Image (cartoon, rainbow, N blue to C red):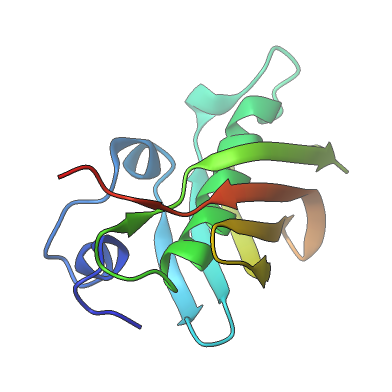
Length: 141
């Protein structure tokens, strides 16, 4: 864990979270940078619903991205970031307005390319899962 890395500065309140994470009401509840795992909480707001009253899939995809990305970000050094190259989402059941638990992990971290997985849960039931590929890059000066 590099305490000077962007992710850890956000966790420790030295930098604000990204605006997208704020919209999703992200809260980090467990981080293990050595294992490459994370648990986060989101709050699915009424503004996220589709005409059927369920949370629209794009918001769930964003929650999954904001679950897996930080799992990797917690392992990066200062000056590194890892944009998502590919995100594959499976929706398993309808999500409602309210708390959503995200669990993410780094499956494999290469020199540049990383493979990630994550799930979202609501009321103890898995609502969506995803895999992603991310590319480690140096931040622009």
